Image (tube, rainbow, N blue to C red; front, side):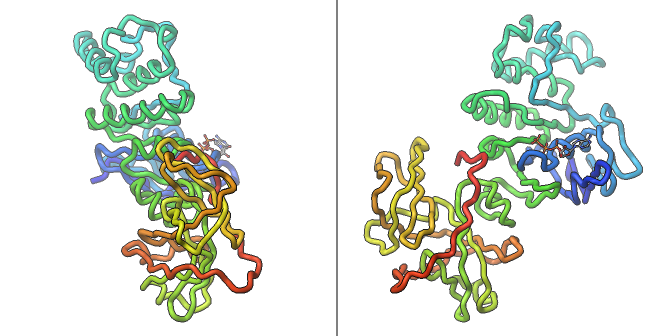
Length: 386
Ligand code: ATP
């Protein structure tokens, strides 16, 4: 039985449809994460789960009990939900201990003290009971805000951009710490963030929202490697979408060479498709006839991320260990090395059946005459830090 279940929920403000037919579920103890561009409806969805926002259609169920439907809105305080927001919102005139125990009104003084001590130890701040919020760093304040939300042992914790005001390094560290804490406390949580690294570090399930719709709700691995929609491929991670055409013999004529896969045999001859090429799908290979020139290099710690313009004019991305440095302007050979294919039809939805096996890639043969190439659709660089 899922702890949280959203079934085809729909939320409008006047004529504006903000959340459209969203369904998702979280099992008890799971951490879910919603990603998506600004204004796509993430916070509205969270507010609906918390009970601050009614539904026009659909239902929200917690542990098999309906809490929201067009005819029903169980008040927030009866839902057993804790919330953590971006702006911490600690009470400045209360000590850390008073802030944490604020929501434990029904507990005895001894129970409160014990819970405060336990949580401060878990968040790595033992002995901070008597401090005031202004005596804490931003990261410490956010840990206290989290402890305050966890203190009454909510059934579900909602986190809306909880780390966005912190610097990137602290954000990543906190995301890992918070995941551990939630797992120790066995709390189900739903997090909204713009930061995919944060989502990948924390989530058991993650989804991308776009214009009110939830395009996919699966594991972070599946979002990255098996995006079901072109917009998910575009939003998550680096990559480019290349265009190709399926021919009668079930091959995909592409700018990287001829790709063959059994599932292509089910696609009608002449069908235009696009397919996803991640940086890890292409490796530098001096002997390859697929050649290009390095246009840009981005240092990513262990790896460099290169943007390479192929001789056909098309740009692709590739990764290489950063100790093997290549320079902008260098000529390089590249070899496609797909583990699996992600192929999209003209409607931007994924064609099924391409995940199970790697395609055979016929070695690239440079064309005799060079017609102007079809341009790839770069997946946008927004919020990318793969
Ligand atoms: P961000 O990532 O920028 O926080 P979001 O995905 O959380 O964005 P929401 O805050 O859910 O987006 O807002 C979605 C849309 O709904 C926006 O266009 C917003 O202006 C609109 N909206 C939100 N609340 C209301 C409201 N109470 N009345 C009218 N419109 C609203």
